[in-house]
Length: 83
Length: 83
Length: 153
Length: 153
Image (cartoon, rainbow over all chains, first blue to last red):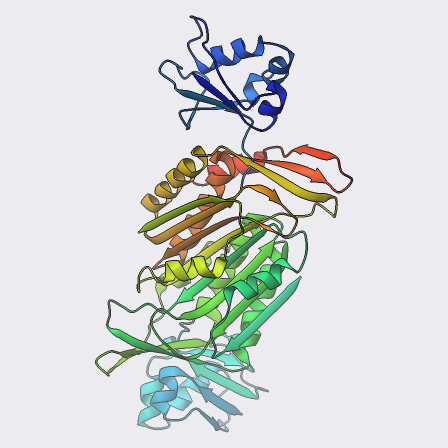
């Protein structure tokens, strides 16, 4: 799946987008965030506070208990501040 | 005092403004409306329903129990429909 | 805080009025405008004739605007009301409220319109397409009720 | 009923957007606009950098606009959100709602802004006058609370 990051999540991971294949057992958004947090210091900083992360699957907002099976694009970002 | 009329009150009385000296005993706005209603057919038509008449004394909205003593200009008109 | 009230025959320029208020202060984060237009009443209306009480119209709208300015933190508040003959699709009234915060701008503009509808001395007469007078527009109970929501706040 | 959503770098033209909606129907009696502007934060802010999620930004705002159109009788609803570098005093966002009735226009514009603030994928970063980054703007609890007023209605 494609992972995309915005705002300080993007700055901390050091990348705007990447392809990733999470291991088996990573079933939900919460699992994905926990797995990403273990991928290195930048990721650890980005995902240290999972509750601060908002997620969209294929450009639709989802909660952290949402399954990620079948997702083409998962976006991870801070709470939005537009308008 | 000067009396000014707007909208259908003006059309029914047939005049936009006039000077008038109400007799003694015409103390409030309600008294004034009752007195005006007796001044002829056009006035009777204009003031037949006192509850439909809104009043301003010297360009400030007042209720029908307001005294008219000291008023320079009394305006009588239907409910407003601006905006 | 600048209050501007104008009663005029001519049309107004929304963009110019918004630009004037946005220039009032660099702390303006929200500008709400309300434009009231003449509807064509399903194609039957030829025009509205708007009568007003000169002098009192401006004084009363300014008083309502001052009430709004006392209730909400505003950087500027503008109200322009036209009179005379107005055709379907044309503007009748403009309100512009500028504030640091969007809720204040929305509420002040809505408050000003609700009070203006029921307290500003203007009267609308309809001229129909068939040449007859449609008569004076009646005041709406809904407009009186719209004031209730501001009473308990 | 026409919904227009645009995500763009360029500024927008309020008067042109209002004119477009007023031309939608001769039954339009009320047009409300909301403009969100960049404040200068007491003179300390040099600019905002607005990042967005291309594709989703437009899709999400359109979804919110469709919700608004289902709740209120509207003739047209427009939302334009800028991205990129925005200076103090410049426009960030425009919402325009047109309806037969003023309450629908006010409420739809306010609803669209409340949801846009918390659901549209945009993020603001501050650039300060002293050359430093002021960091990413934090989401406000007040913006989350603003949604509550639409829940029970």
